[in-house]
Length: 162
Image (cartoon, rainbow, N blue to C red; front, side, top):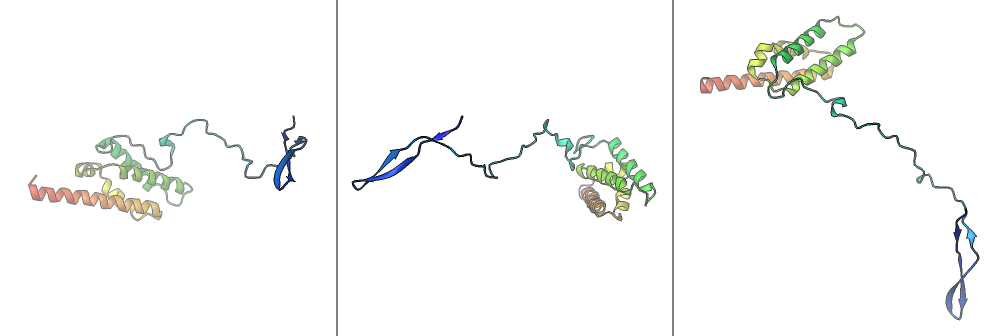
């Protein structure tokens, strides 16, 4: 069914402007402006999880009290990745694995005892010379953190004699 609009014509009578009704006229089909036409937006089938985000690190143990077994697994994985043949086709995969392990280590609050027992210092120190700038940056930051933790512990031993 067509939509109708009641048009009015102005008529001037005795100095006043009056409107007279005219016959009903159908509205002309005008094309919609482009701004009014919206493409259909696909809605996600389910809500995303935080763990699915690219830079989110899921820790195996507590941030404040990491387990030595988790740290040793990271140590062994880093050593294994560093020992693999450089220049092979899986170079990008190796760097991604190194980054993942270094980011995980960066999330933990490590004590001097855990650093000594896990032997992570020498491995991270070697990664500071990596050709990948992201690995190099994170490894350098981690090594500086390790150094500050050990220095703080040494100062507290000297000061308090513990």
